[in-house]
Amino acid sequence: MTTFPLPLSELLGHWGAYVVFALIGVAFGYALEIAGFGNSRKLAAQFYFKDMTVLKVMFTGIIVAMVLIFTASSLGLLDYNLVWVNPTYLWPGIVGGLIMGAGFIIGGFCPGTSLVAVATAKIDGIFFTLGVLFGVFMFGETVSNFEGFWNSSYMGRFTLPDWLGLETGTVVLLVVLMALFMFWGSEQLERIFGGMEPKKAPKWRYGAAGALVIVSIALIAVGQPTTEDRWQTIAAEKSEILSERAVQIDPGELLELLHDTKLKPMMIDVRDEANFNLFHILDAKNVPQAELPNVIADLHMEPANAVFIVMSNDEAAATEAWKTLQAESVPNVYILGGGINGWLDQFAGDEFKAQYAVTAAGQDQLQFAFDAALGSRHAAAEPDPHQFELNFVPKVELELKRAPTSGGCG
Image 1 (cartoon, rainbow, N blue to C red):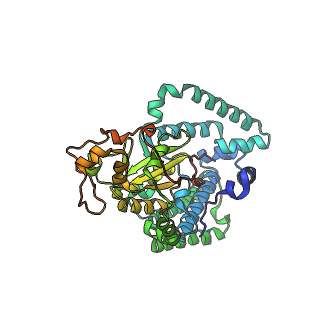
Image 2: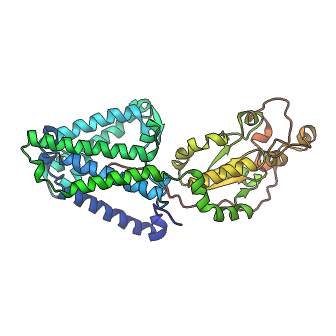
Image 3: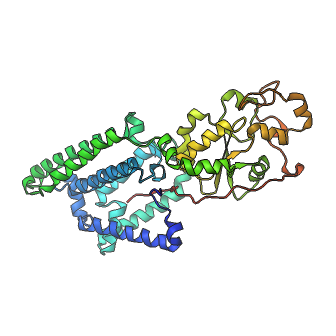
């Protein structure tokens, strides 16, 4: 079953996808305009507690989108791994939020609403946008002076469930209840400072609020799909690929990939630390099977030309890692055929094999007995491709990257 988000560029072509993006942008701008967000007076009234439309519209958009996203995810219609979530840089984010908030208060616009004002030829919106562009230019010219702080306190894809240690459905319900409390509070502020009467507001808002609460409670009961759930939906197709050995690449192909400047090969060694320290390929990253879920978000952030090669002593653990990454929608994942044993058999040399080969190694165990933990301090860890005759059937083909690698602010 095809899940959202869809690969628009593949379905509609380059320019077709841009047409969709343009239509979404126009629709978003129209929604902001009819909500009154092109008027700086209306936006500024937020900070005097006279008109809380900004809070109510924005929080409504946030909680409705949140509920729909996680409902679609729980039903298997949306792959949440492929949804862009801004990575968290804690302290730069706090400082940036304070600066942007101060600009919002002083200028009466945020970047998105200022463009709406420009579209309707409002002079204050034009000057605000020019100020934004000047600020962007100045930031680009000076960021090298505080680049250390700019990239500090990186926490990756850090969400509220991660922070609170709660199930997604529980967090969704808590956020919805918080938003409804803020809606009620904003109406009281409008009544006190703006002279508005809450009783005149549409009655259907109570039904909408109740629906959001009910769906949020249902999300707790249904839950979000696990890695195993996702694997079961694709198991038939992917198991056939495994049995045909379409993703088990020859050590010679991996060696060639490591010297291909057009690709970014990333080797993920899923063995335990002891085996990894005995011997590993140069630049391989040790990520034991149990820790693999912790790096999936970072793998999605890699560029479209990234190729991931999972490896273990043989192929058993690497195959399980491949299944995990496939279930989590990581593209361009391959298995090192024969594992580290196959790599050493091909590149360690006859003298090494004669001296250190083990004849009775168990399943997914090293077939070579090292005298010491060599790590990557062995010639076989970085073989020279010109010294070997590499004969293999190429299997690596780049898939379309569906997960975005950047996002933005409305």
